[in-house]
Length: 358
Ligand code: HEM
Image (cartoon, rainbow, N blue to C red; front, side, top):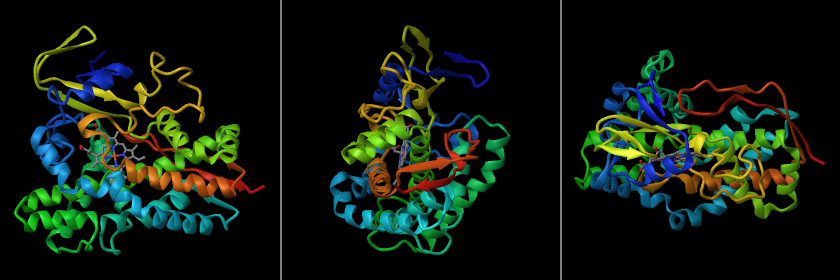
C-alpha cells in the first residue's frame, strides 16, 4: 500500500511484515528505519541502523549480556526487586500505573543492569520517548523532539568520556571494546545510545499496558490469577494486542516485489508490527484479548536479525511484575487514563489506578 503523504510502501499484513524482516539483505535498516532523512543520518552506524556483517559485529559486542543464559542467574534478583517496588506502591490507596508502578520498577532494574551512574537517571525515560518521536515523519513532534533527544546523546558521550560505566554492566562492555580497539569513541557513544533508548520506555509501556488491559478485561485477569502458568503467554498477548512499538522503516537495496507489487530499489517500506499483530488473515478473532491463546509468533519484538535484543530482559521484568500482582490484586480499577501522543509508540502517559485485594 503506497502512502502518498509519507512516500513509503506500508506493509500492514503479517505475512509481508515477516518475510520483509527475514530478508535483511534486501530490506536494510541503514538509512531507512526512520521516516525522515535527518534522523536516519543522525543514527547512521548504530547497531539498529547498520546491516550485514557490521550489524552482527556490533550486536555481538554486548548482545551476549542479554541472552537467556546470561539473564538466568539474574532472575531471582529481578523478582526480589520487582516485589519490593510493587509492595511499596501497593501501600497507597491509588497510584499511577505508568509513572509510579511501571516506571519505578523499570528504573530499579534497567539502569543498574546497563551499569550507568546513579546520578542523572531521572530524564532518561523522557529522552527515550523523544528519540522515538524523532523516528516519525518530520512533523512538529519530531522536530521538537530532536533537541530533547540530543540530551541522550550528550549523556552517552559523557558516559564514554568520563568512563563512568559500572564494572560488570552492559555499558562497561562498550568501554572494554573501545579499550581493545574494536570500536572508536564515536561508535562507543552510538552503542551506548543503542541500549539506553529502547530499554526503558518500552518496558514501562509493557508493564503499564498489561495493567490497563487487565483492568478492561477482568475475566482475563481471573484466568491469570487462577493459573499463573499463563503469565508468559499472557504477556505475549499483551504485546500482540497493544503492540508498543508500532512500526519501523526499511530501505530497499534492490528492485523487488512484495505481494505482486513492484518495489523499486532505494525506496522505503514501513513495517507495521502493530497492524500485523491484528491481521485477521493470521489471527483467529484478532480483536479479542485472550490470554489462553499463545501468540508466541507475534512480531511485537520484531523478527529476524534486528529482532529485539532486549526482549529476554523485558520478559523477565514484566512477567515478574504480573506474578507479584496476581498474588496480591484481584481487580484493577482505572479511570482517566491518558494515551501518549508519540510518532512511534503506543503507550500511556498516565493510568490512575485503584486496586481491590480480595
Ligand atoms: C516491552 C519491551 C520492548 C519492546 C516492545 C521492544 C520492541 C522492539 C522492536 C519491535 C524491535 C525491532 C525493530 C526492528 O526490527 O525494526 C526492537 C529492537 C531492539 N530492542 Fe527492543 N523492545 C523492548 C525492550 C527492549 C529492552 C529492555 C532492550 C535493551 C535492554 C531493547 C533493546 C533493543 C535493541 C538494541 C534493538 C535493536 C536490535 C538490532 O537492531 O539488532 N529492547 N525492540
